[in-house]
Image (tube, rainbow, N blue to C red; front, side, top):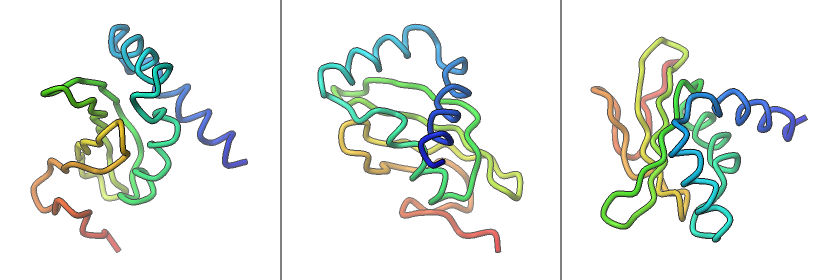
Length: 106
């Protein structure tokens, strides 16, 4: 079941990527330079209790970055920057959110 959910997330996220992002990410995965997005998404969504809206794949200062745009259960939109090589969360852009994780909406 978990694998089906991951596959569904990747299929739904696919159209949100620009063609060049998709090609660059696929090539980097093939060269073992980055972790597949399907391994990153479930952990990020769980950590931030959110849904995925959009994904971008960029190279900044020689570092591959996944930028995930999310919406939380309370409707807040956040952008999470993830080191594509290690899976480490590098930062979160949203007022009221801390770099080490979200303030939960309990």
